Length: 294
Ligand SMILES: CCCCCCCCCCC/C=C/C(=O)SCCNC(=O)CCNC(=O)[C@H](O)C(C)(C)COP(=O)(O)OP(=O)(O)OC[C@H]1O[C@@H](n2cnc3c(N)ncnc32)[C@H](O)[C@@H]1OP(=O)(O)O
Ligand SMILES: NC(=O)C1=CN([C@@H]2O[C@H](COP(=O)(O)OP(=O)(O)OC[C@H]3O[C@@H](n4cnc5c(N)ncnc54)[C@H](OP(=O)(O)O)[C@@H]3O)[C@@H](O)[C@H]2O)C=CC1
Image (cartoon, rainbow, N blue to C red; front, side, top):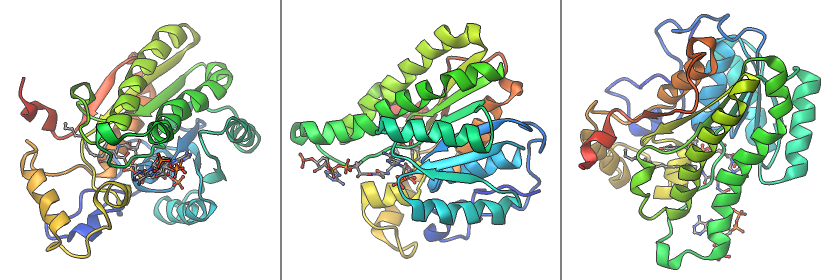
């Protein structure tokens, strides 16, 4: 068994670190850990979502991935099969659209059965100074990150409850309580997701549903490069790549995150290993938040 998204070797150039890669050490979780569980991963065709889909599949779950792009989903289906030797299912779905989300729930139920794991990973982001933030720009991000998370989770509530061991995982951002300068829309959305998570945990615990949030630090995916920093670097000499390499030196563990780092936390929190953990936000950032001062 192999798992995807392992940290690239120290000699790898930045382009090699952008997407999950095959790992050379054994998969750390049992392949039966999530056997007979159905998982839904939004934004599961790229970056962190793709690594999550692979890791859940490796742990034995039947996984459905969604995003808006049918083309990216088809490519991701093939990629997961190539890396794990097991299939995933996919359906285009815009998490902002109620009808799309209802179709997704019906598709999951028909193909795989009741969802026991919902991973809210889909998100939108772009740099915009707070004083220039238009209502439309603010809404574009809140609708995707916050309303999308609420809408998908609520649609699967009956499924989650029916399994007796439902688990909702929502992806936030590390140290969001300090704000997110330049990205106030995304910061507000992710902070609200942490609060939603706590409300769900309290209200739905008696139904056997756990809800947790994972808050990553910087993970240089293609999405981050393209939407926040410009095009991905073509070599380690690129200014963007150099800036990221310097940023890594500020991290106590002296490297940026990988999609795999986040995916491992998702598998653990989704499983019965975390059966008494609910309502928490787990920071996965190499200790970066500790360097930000009081
Ligand atoms: C411990 C230390 C702390 C560490 C913290 C970690 C820091 C790491 C940094 C990474 C954090 C997070 C990263 C991510 O979230 S990565 C995900 C990125 N992926 C994406 O964004 C992909 C999806 N993006 C989109 O689909 C679209 O861009 C979006 C949905 C956002 C917009 O599409 P939509 O069609 O809905 O909207 P419109 O095009 O109609 O636009 C609406 C308004 O928004 C403005 N807009 C949209 N995109 C941009 C842009 N790229 N730049 C500037 N403005 C944008 C647009 O102008 C519209 O407003 P106006 O009508 O007023 O002009
Ligand atoms: N990378 C990082 O440094 C960090 C990332 N995060 C979070 O991790 C998660 C994954 O980010 P990352 O992998 O880096 O970036 P990606 O851009 O690769 O992932 C975002 C995914 O969301 C999907 N998506 C966007 N809008 C919608 C929508 N309306 N409906 C359905 N799907 C949508 C995109 O697919 P499509 O365009 O096909 O719809 C894409 O697959 C996000 O929640 C992000 O905020 C948090 C902290 C740091």
